[in-house]
Image (cartoon, rainbow, N blue to C red; front, side):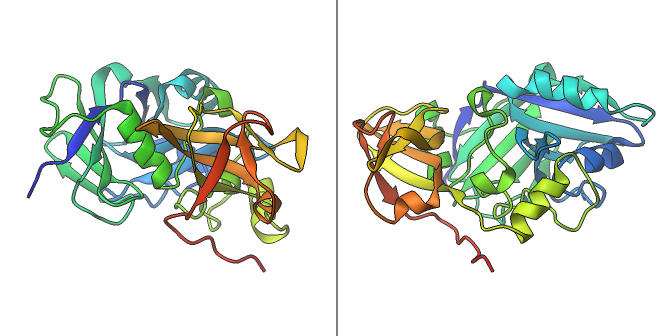
Length: 292
């Protein structure tokens, strides 16, 4: 079997939650169920404001005894750690920045497994991600990195967009409720667990309203940056969406963007302004459930 290609994700960090109440505390704060988290799976989860807007997106798994580790983009880590710490109160849970202890790698061409399945190899964990052969591998910072050909950050970003997944970054904090980036489709929201910040808004979006904005994948011949606005040909004054993830290859960009669904019915979408580069829609690699 050929080795997976790999990239050290230097722009990712790790939060440690340690203590007898670590799982129950995170369960009360995040969009996914951590009370039932086992050692063979990870959880995709979001941390929301009271208005249901995502402050951070992350992947959590059980580490050592009474320990849960959370991997997330480093640009949202400090604010997430600070805000989560405000709610610990009497819970037996200590939160800390453990980024200096771990190296996070992205793998392409890894053995295909159901998303969020976790395997262990000594002190390393490997978490299957959405998309064929994609995985996160997290290991102690002083351990040898995974073997395999190195890929570039753009290779990884292209694969992320192709998989139809986007992580909250510094420029998109509070830009989305989870469903706007298809988070519940990707396994990032439990609608059976108890309350968490923003839960009422997230549930209402799911059950009471028609979702008017969703993550879609596009290709274009211009560079794109996360947080860049998208405009529709028929409405040049008001943005129709925002770039949520983007990678480049051979002079083209592949982007996952949060878009007003009505704008897909006619006209054209453009990057940066109504006169900007045209966005060409590509099919999502997963199905969006129909709304009632």
